[in-house]
Image (cartoon, rainbow, N blue to C red; front, side, top):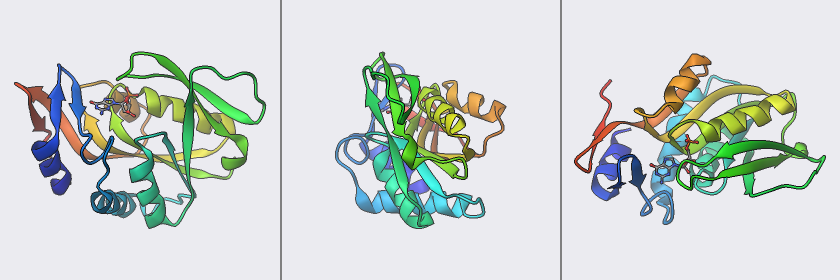
Length: 191
Ligand code: 5GP
């Protein structure tokens, strides 16, 4: 998505070797008009899939996920993050190692919001090593639901998440695909 790439070039900041900070439009302050256009991009790509639910993880996945939900006219469920969860039979729970925080968290979704007849589109803000997506996939399997596809706002293609998803042959659309960070500059994949 050209507009997103231009926005990343303009407002993104590369931190260290492998982190992109985009807190002026995605991770802290949110640009609603851009989010809406991203939701429409996800819809264009996945509109022929029988999506009944959008799944994401709090908090930065919520804005693009809601806009996708609006385009598909389906509910959006966000997994909650907890340090530890005491046994609760009403929840699906999975472990996720956080790339940015370097800690392991449990994510959970109430059983009442995901059922075996759901067809799910996962949306997230970033794809790095694929841990967040793997946790959501685990929960979808626990529910016996169907994973139809994955929509990512910013993919860092040089990390292993993309490969993991491709190996499982899950349809994926990333709106911006970063090939590398070179001298603090973002280099995008070209088609
Ligand atoms: P993964 O689970 O794919 O390793 O990492 C995905 C999660 O880590 C995303 O949901 C996002 O919150 C966070 N993340 C990973 N890489 C970056 C990054 O470069 N910048 C920001 N802001 N968040 C990131």
